[in-house]
Length: 471
Image (cartoon, helix red, strand yellow):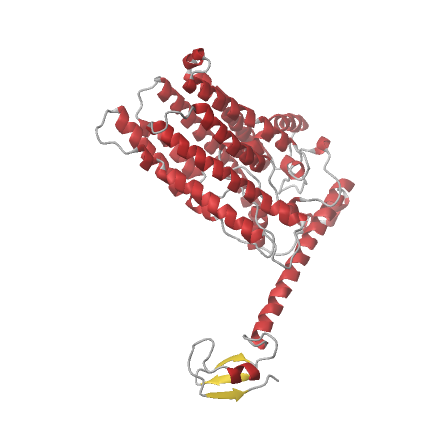
């Protein structure tokens, strides 16, 4: 009970972290717009402080990447997720120094090409790492290409293609800002960024692992989308994400596409103002250009705040929740739930994403097995609705299926290791039956040992071959 209570408080802390991250990002965007518009005299160092605090809040640096299925499973973050925070902060620090020195008319300020080096290094790292993952997830020569392998490899390929265009767009932007390419227009850069974002939008809107997220029977009804779990009363109530994320076209997926519109509108307004097409566009106020981002991040803040209040209410009231509050909370979720997945467009860190792969790894690290009905007594289980019982059976079947796959893979690994102990390391056919002296390595069969003059492991000259046999 204490452990479950602690888990509930951890969920509240995660919701607070989520709210703080979105609020800090909104503060940075607002201060940046004011600084560009000349509405504030704050130093550039103060402008960048909320952005650096945002990095501190989401410092775990886990990107929203699906975990590869067995046998390619890995329990660590991708390479580019590890180097993300240092390289991004390095780019932001160099950019802040460049802008500050330029604002005070300093004679020796950093070259803009040096400022962009960490950003380009970060993008190249993402490109190389995703191509590496594509190659690792591809089946071998003797294996056929399954649908699961295609769905698992495709998102990494999308990100890699996106990085190709993003690197080109970043280089062209750098050359444009340095004045090295006068013929290059802002709309040309917008096209490059747009192509890169198309692939990024595909990943951020709809990216899940079919091996884990697929459900064998039916879809959840939208009329029962809001349910929660209260640990003290034993009331089974699951969140909206548990239902919508498993559906083929959920509310978050639709909202993810809706949230792309403000980003595209912001970029179009920015290009219109920079390029001066039409000429009157040069007089568009900066705050009007940033208005789509304000609306987007404001929606994320409101939704994060509603989730925090909701978790606090359910934790403090011990399950005695008024039905009117549930109805209001349901309407709020239906209105703001698209922010849950669409907010990944604000940054690639999974600060508010219930990643099933990550939850599975964390759960497996703490305890093994499947806790059916979360330990509820039989009298509570008997009173559950048939739909809840059916869903629990489906989850149990999915867990058993995953356990069978894991057991099968473990058995294959065990057999492989056993074969390595008894099968000759050279011919891989006959059993090991000779000990090589003086090094005393036992790795060869009789035929291979007679043909070898030096030990294959330590390269010591073989003086004597002693036959041994397992009993």
